[in-house]
Length: 108
Image 1 (tube, rainbow, N blue to C red):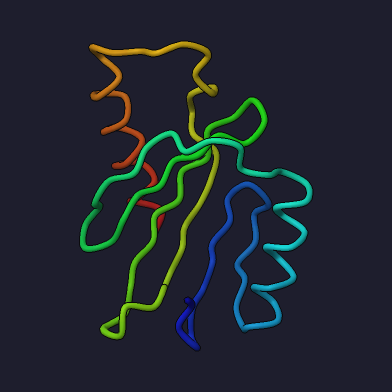
Image 2: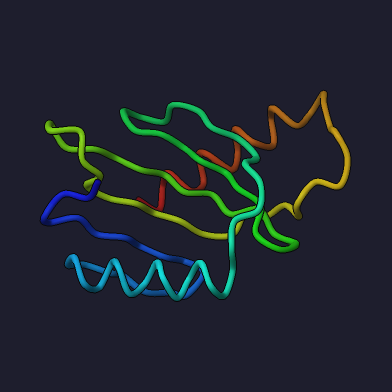
């Protein structure tokens, strides 16, 4: 799944994680503390992909980029500036999501 030289930049915990054991330990602890409960959005993003998911009362954005072999090269994640949705929203939601993608992509 991850390239040998993959790096995860986590803005939630303000850490950068590398190495197979480091990634395994990070995700085990992260998913125990803040499990993802629902997919919010999934879309292409500058040669990679943007995944937004709900964790507790927050939406978390994750931008993944891949190497030539299709393995994850970088993953930049952090809390969205918007709370988790409590009802279906439409209209300006597309513009808000575009701003979220652009602001998170600049971090990576």
